[in-house]
Amino acid sequence: MVRIAIAQIRSTDSAEANLHISEDLIQQASSEGAQAIFFPEASDYICSDGARCKQLCQPIEYSIFVQGLRKQARKYKLPVAVGIHEPCTDAENTRVKNTLVWINEAGEVLHRYQKVHMLEMKLSDGPQIHEGDFCQPGRSVLSPFETPIGRVGAMICFDLRFPSLAQKLVSMGAEILIYPSAFVPNTGELHWIPLLQARAIECQAYVIAPDQVGQHNEQRSSYGHSVVIDPWGRIIAQLGSEENVLAYAEIDREQVKHARQSLFLRKRE
Image (tube, rainbow, N blue to C red; front, top):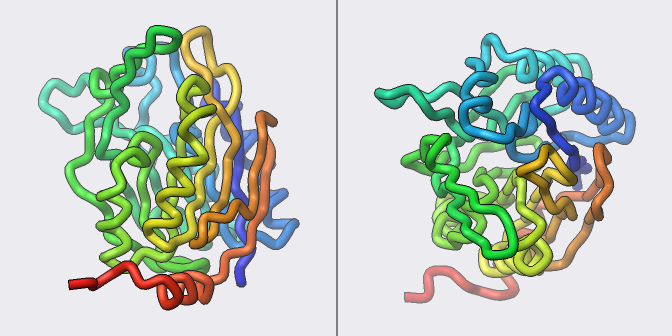
């Protein structure tokens, strides 16, 4: 078994402040024996509007936030999965990419996934968000990649509502599904845990879901309740509404194999 840490933070529009918080959490995770740490979606910054989001966006090689995490990963020999923003390559260049990057224990950015499903929300009693107005959707999944804790399939937040994406990653060899998120409280109270448990049960995989938490600005807040779920749908680590904290879980690849051998869901033709 391997020990992991999930980080629950409240990002603001200050990448420097968000970096300081994240650096402290990486140090804590290392001291507690974690072999990987998982941060939420948009850990580098969360803004109140698309123009500000575009203004703050920097390529990875110039990002204070990403370069700081790379340094910490090298220092503590601790892989880091984190949601960030990257500049967009669309013709009008008015949007950004919502991505997840995997930084290995040597501080190298080895893998990138660009969020496929953009949040479209229009709640009568909550926020109205059209993520596609300021984020460019990705066009493909990232093949599952080998890590010290198992083969990881990467998704981001709203991707959670599309089970076929998770099932595709599992068919490609994923043992662990990760969903870094910034889930809004209105839907989080009703949907967050049930959706994550459903993905774990139907895919017979671990689910790791670090979520943003608290009030980011006047327009945006996040639900929190970051969680790790085992291949049987059991919650094995969970946070509440605390800010800038960690939870720990043990990941056992044999549990994935056991679940899939015990309850046969694949190749039923």
